[in-house]
Length: 442
Image (cartoon, rainbow, N blue to C red; front, side, top):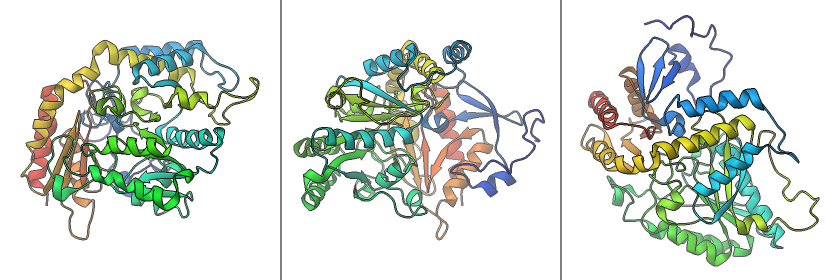
């Protein structure tokens, strides 16, 4: 069916789309023109079930009245205010509510505009923290293989997804990587945290021995790696990372851009796993994906190390034009209130067992070599077509879209992370459609 002419763009060539096979898309475009609740609507009038919360961000679903109205009101009241040496009330109110929602050690929020910027900010805070304490030799950063920390130079340097790095030449110097936590031979088809792999954290001790603890500023990991294909932390792994970082005075950063705001059934994964880092990065669900905004949550110990010297001096030479933007702050406040009023984090925790059963019912279907899940997130890994990596999963993505379901793929892995408002009937539709598609894949 042809696109509704009122919503069809007259030219597709000007927009260079991110993380997209542009030529394929522009031959057969897939356009969303509206959204409500659990569903997108396409230009030809079809409804498509959102199985990915947009891009892991629309945790409260689409068109939430409180969020829509907050943006409308704020735009007419105060559209912009500078964040350097000036303030506006809603940014402070949001920071307070965000820290109240976070686990106990986190008392301060530094606002950014995206997950990528949150990562850059956290890395810079870690470096500056050590310098403020007289340990300026701590400049080395440690990431993890298959880690995703956004697309800016710091993020792709500590990140470990090959295609995100290989095209951009020399990255930041002084960066090492821990091994990925994916052990398919031992942990395939695990439900929740895998049993095997806690020992992988010990590689941090090897890196410390190689370079000296006095040179290492921070370790950054996703507590549960999302964009690389939903890789779960083995039991005891995060705890051991925390112990080693504490032992050697290394800042531990949790990248919670995906796991924050209810995805695992808790406010943050740090709370879910009971392991507290020194800094948390977040974005996406902070404003329900409606307006770009991110944040770095810091403990009082980190923050207070900067609050020295003359009071008229800037303590941290870092920030963005849109840090704490008024409209984004209003959206954030309304989003956090929506989560609370509708009990969406508790809802995610309650639905997780039903989600798990539906997801693992796909075991045994053609090409399925692994299934992984935690909270309202899941992955189905497919065997690749020989010589054509990513093609099989991409075909599954296209077929699901045609059948009215949105999934996401990374490599030959199908990832799903629905809005937390999902009903059991939607879960049945999502996995039922995916099962039908998998049965027909070459």
